[in-house]
Image (cartoon, rainbow, N blue to C red; front, side, top):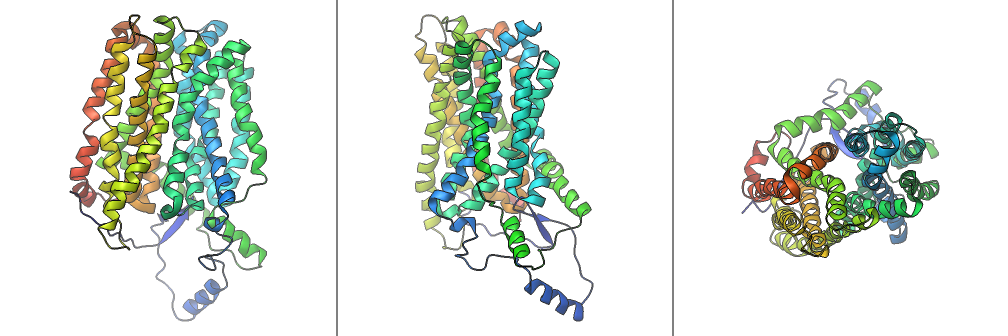
Length: 505
């Protein structure tokens, strides 16, 4: 069993980026006496924190309805951006035919969009740091919509692929800061965990519904450009609501409060130092943790593999259900509802485990202590069996002699396992690394996840054509079996790995 409590401490000078505490590596030991008195006087005149635990300006103290609305905004934006990855998939054959390219080249529309999602989060960090979270949505969403519209207006494959990449890049900041918005609004002890899980669901529900909605849009409207208009129809109306929404970033709210009262704003690090910190948090440190920290690396690999398989299904499902069962493009999208149901069930699973096993661990320790991070891994240890079960199920039932509903149902354990592993892994990362390094660890996970999402569709059709449906899917299932022990290994040896990590205190 892992240890029952964790104690964390940190020292040194810190600043905050996107609501996360970041070590600046700077200190100011010079000056004393009058300088200290001047500093104390200056600090006392600044608005640096909430005035009381019940401060009405604190988003955590807003009414329940207002909090739900402000949680739904990044949730729907996140759904729309994630939905954009797969809604394009039903149109790939038509894009290839119309633009005179191969299916593989047309598939790059998925890969480049995913690559944009991998690289795009760093676009939002400077905006969030200087102007708050609302500004990120206000500035990046219209650019996202414009590039989506440009995709629909493209007359050649080059412009289509370039616009798909930039649509992903400018949609990514909404996914990246959405979790921060949820953290601004909810106390983790009072609904915050459930709110965070529901937000994270958008990155799974969007891709699993995209082929279904896109398939019917293509079949009823007859042209692939309608796949782009669907994204705009989901995103555009919500954008208008943003102008009536409120800022949730504590730092930005306090800045505005200070300005309204004619008081000095809280000090900011010099621009050069701020940019260096942003570079460290959004790029350098995530890559460093991905390459040097075993916990981050193995969880990122596992989550990314599952995500890559989901993206591979964007090609595999039409190949199977249209080729074996004679489905239309719309009907083949209907098969993704198995994965959709599985992702919904994962929320219930995570909630049950959190309310039972994790709460039981909390009751065994002092009220001011937290259970060991490994207590978060129960869901992943159970859910890890869902991926190979679902893949083998699909592999050996997708044939003419078996009714189409049977391989469709195989998507349920796969979607359930994929989502539960991710939920469990992310909460484990947050509990392990805290605010200081947790944001970078999650960024590393997201980066690798979308890289896998970009790569897997590029070889899926060739693999299914050369190996056949059963063995192509079984190959993925066998790979998932190799990764199945990862949550168990982390549960047993996680405390030792954490003790050796330079990113934990």
